[in-house]
Image (tube, rainbow, N blue to C red; front, side, top):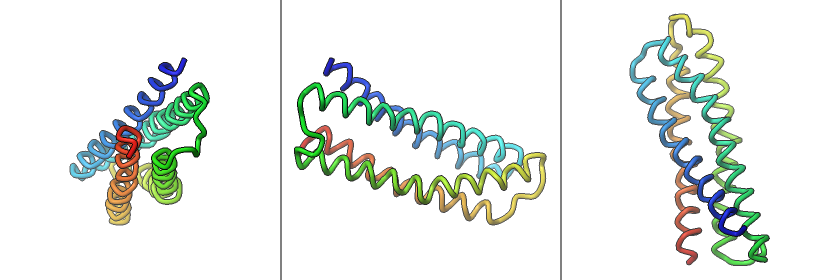
Length: 153
């Protein structure tokens, strides 16, 4: 049973990190096109992918990790490396909830207004740059948590 939970945990990491990196890549390419129809379509895709894959990744990470810890009779706050990994995961989640989600919602609303080919407000591109910067910032603790969970320093 432990191996199943561990596999779900690792699968969650793959889904989450894969989604955040590829979503940013495609969004940047769409924004670079300066085509309002392409950007609006990509923005809708970003929102769907974020809620679908990010949320599924988080649930797999949490469910698999907690399940593996319980099966192994390991306290969830027992080892320093585990606490550090959980804290980094939580930090990334806070950035996602407090900064990235509001930016993404605002961009989605703006994209709806120019989806038919209208002018793209400069505010959209400012928010898009902020979303990318904060997205990278939120990804750093995830990668650090991945290292800590593997290396267990």
